Structures are given as structure tokens and as C-alpha cells.
Image (spheres, rainbow, N blue to C red):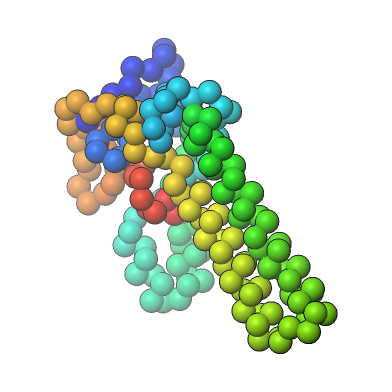
Length: 189
């Protein structure tokens, strides 16, 4: 477990492997992460990214068996969320910016192809396939760019000892204040 020595009034931040542990904030507050880039540990010299992270207990996925709409409604009601100000170095800020740009441009090109290709005599099946592939590609790029913002720099909140206590049956950790984890996986719901 690592700790970041925050400025007075800041939130304590710790790391346990790939998991960042941050004290819970009041609703509507943005928690600033420490200045090094969370992806590589280099100095964060770009504009920090404000990002909302939401999660719920994994057992809620069983509600999908009752119906996707039931799951979606319950998940929105019981989810927990936090807004983080995530520092990135110039290189990772540029990569994220490029990914977000591609996530918008590629689907727009696919939709434009749906109107342009038929005028050029392209078969309707091919037009539909190209459009769907371009739109899905944009959605995948957007999802990867959105989820993969909190990285795994070993220099970001260096690990020391495991001083937090995991609450039974949850992903919630306690120290002086209630803590919650962020992982470098697709566990951000």
C-alpha cells in the first residue's frame, strides 16, 4: 500500500498494486490526483482531465437475467461515483486527444459513407457493413480511451505497506476515512 503525502486539506491517496485508493469526497466535489502523470510517472505538464468514475457491486450483474432494463435502472440508482482530476503528461494527453478525435471522426465518416457510397453504385449490403464497422470502431475507441485513463505508473503513489482494511464482501477499503478503489481494468461502470 502506498501513500501520497497530500497538501493540507487534500484527499489521502494510496496504491495497492494496480488499485488506487482515495478517500471519499462529498457529492459534487472533484478530487485532484497528485501531479505526476498517472500513466507513466512523468511530470504532468498538460491540462488535467476531469473524469467521472462510477461503480456498483458486481452481484448486480445477475439482474441482467431479469432483463437489461431492470439491471440498468437498478445500477443507475445504487451506483457510487466520484469525479477525479487526472494529471497526464504531454505524450499521454496527446494520445488521449487523438483517440477521442478518432472516436468522433470514424463514425462520422461511416455515416457519410452511407450517403456517398450508394451514389457511386456500391451495393447496399456493403454500404451497411462499412457503416456499421466504422460506427462500432468509433464506439470501441471511445470506450478504451474513456476507461483507460487511470494507468499503472509504478512511480504514482509508490507502494509501501498494506495499512488499509478491506470491508467484508465489498471493494471498499477503510483507513481514517472511507476509501474506495480504482483499478486499471474495465471495472469502471
